[in-house]
Amino acid sequence: MNNISIGEFSQTARAMIQQQRYAEVIVFSKQIQVIHPNAAEVHFVLGLAEKRSRNLQGAKQSFEKAINLDTQRYDAAIELAELLVVEGDFKHAFFILTHNEPKLVKSSYYLNIAGTCYTKIGMHEKAWESFKLADKVQPNTDSILANLADCAVLMGKAVVAMKIYQKIIEKYPSHQKTHYEFSKIKKADNASHINEMKALLHNSNLPPHQNIYLYYALGKELEDLEQWEESFSFYEKAGKTILSKANYSVKPEVDAINSIINLCDKSWLTDNTSTPPKMDKTPIFIVGLPRTGTTLIERVLASHSKIESADETFFMTMAINKERNIKGVTEIDSQFIKQGVNANIHNIAENYLSMIDYKLSDKPYFVEKYPFNFLLLGFIAKAFPTAKIIYLNRHPMDACFAMFKQSYFKFAYALADLAEYYVAQHKLHKHWKRVLGNRLIELSYEDFVTSQETSTTLLFNQLDIEFEQACLEFYKNTSASATASTLQVREKVHNRSINKWTHYKPYLAPLEEMLNKYGIDTKVTIKT
Image 1: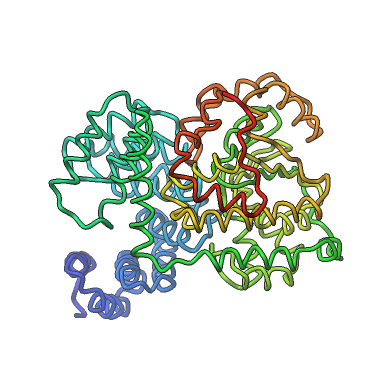
Image 2: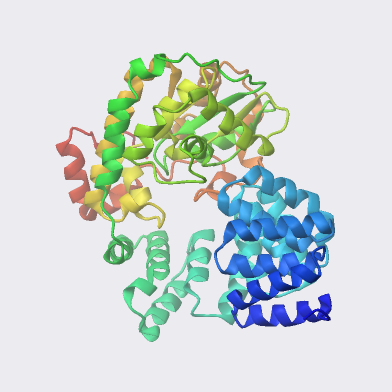
């Protein structure tokens, strides 16, 4: 053992990792550390084994040690950055990624990991460059191509993404997720891809829970072809299949909303002895249910010369969690709210600003458009007395149906759950109007898309920011957008999505009845 070289150790230990003998590698590495305490390779290999053994703190320490011993070890740096992203320390991860960029130019493996990290921390332009370079270093690698295509969508490069997805489908015709991603890129104008996916469903003979991507893809393309009944049947089947395997109840989410209403009242909001943090820029929070136009308004505002976008982040949730001694993102449940209202609001504000600053330049305003921040408006208003808050509204049935046909929202997989959640958030919305008063800038999606210029100038008036003509040409904005609407916001304003739900009216009748029962008006008021 005393005579073993670092090269011999590395070759043996890496082979053991390939064989998934992680515990043995950890013992072996620690033995070699006694002989070669300053060998970066030993600490790096130990970090790999600890990472795969799920000892993430131990892995972090090993990678940090390797970097300290050899600052050129970009492999250890990117491995460390990946762990920091898992922890939610995006700012630190961003620093490490950018610092090591020049060293990655010949490693497709670590360029691909770096791109994935950049994607997760919301730096999609950086991710795009990493994936492109990875593909150049090692062309036609499946994992790199898939990441490049997904990133191309976020960058608004639909043609690039489409060609890659077609290439992957040709090579792997049964890969359902690729069919799903491909279906979202453009409007289907014939049934060829639908027939291909139906044949795949028929021939693969897989259980329903392994076909969810195809169900959503078929629902979407059948909708494109105005095959409303069959389209709905696939959307409905997707949601039911997910719920058949999930232990989900909408009740905890409704309970959390009720806790917000009970605890985040006007007396709590005004009881603030903390000094607001010093801020050299003003945040603009855009909130509302998903699929109500939050991305559209973010793009409009970010086309202004004095406003930049931080896109969607979970930083408000993470900032509150930090005061609860919890790392990263968790569900916003009743416990979260009960502990959050007793946390130091000044610290929450400082946490948020520290987390988000790596995404910002020197512009005086920034937009944060995570829709579910509508749950945290009390914390936002209390933490940032000068922040501006825009609340998007959309026709209840259009909003609900738009969520129902997406694969992202647990409360929207079943119409009964969706109705219950919508009623609860409607109650919360009325609460915020009472509590926040004119701090809340209300904006109707329908009004905006039917009278863009009037609505835009009025919005900037309410924000007390001088209007700029470029905001009417938001579709020229080339920056990335990590949202289900990423391709739609590259288009000019249109009203095609107004009253879309009416095509499905017979199948959405149970939802409409439940909303009407609670006094929510679902009448069609705008003709298209």
